Image (tube, rainbow, N blue to C red; front, top):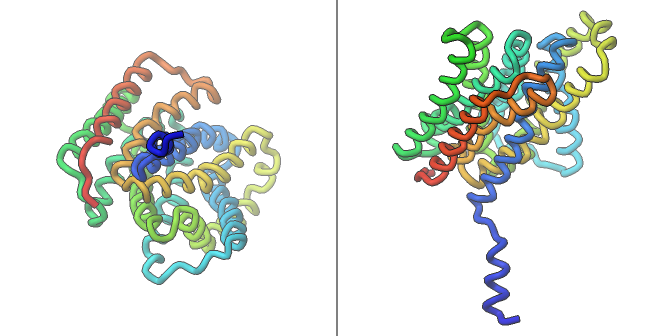
Length: 306
């Protein structure tokens, strides 16, 4: 084969760092998209606090094994503050608030509110000085967020409830964890970031889970296979393995840009809710999904300065 043809063939299958980051981010979003449906199944039988903190404890055990297997070094002193934000936002705050909200909100409704995360993540990254999105980026991010927020208001009859406010608080905490973790992943790697954040949360999580088991152990033990299977998914995938893809994607493609992929998550979650919970998937859901996909495609082409 001619050398020029061989070189061209090899290059045709090569993805840029930004494209690879977008694809990894999409894989993380697909994993995260089933979190709310499975959480809603779990909180039917378990206390929301047990679902949120118990999944963090289970994931922390996996993280300890991964760190020991890879002989990972201790994080530098400068990394502990960002890791604390990841622990607060992604390990404790977001899971706890969303678990509580799923007691009263349909998974599809909560999923739409999670669509605010990309704009919140980009805004947090900009305020912290990590990235400087262009005005065009802010316009596309605001348009996508307006779509999902407007959808939430339509579904709730034009008024927000206490569970809605809990979801918005979860979004703010999750955005901080995503942005700090995405930046830290550039130097530590996404696997180490989520692993150390989980271990950092252990002094709070372990005693709380022990107390919850002592208080409500009989009900926990009596739960059927569906709640336990749901709990296993959000512990292994939502709380741990999904971040391998998500943080690595943000490290390669940038926090703000890869974060826009998460605009697709509400609609993937709706599909999961329809499949797992028999929640209706209407034509309006599909139309909103198409509109958001177009916004994500536009946002990907805007300029973002690191």
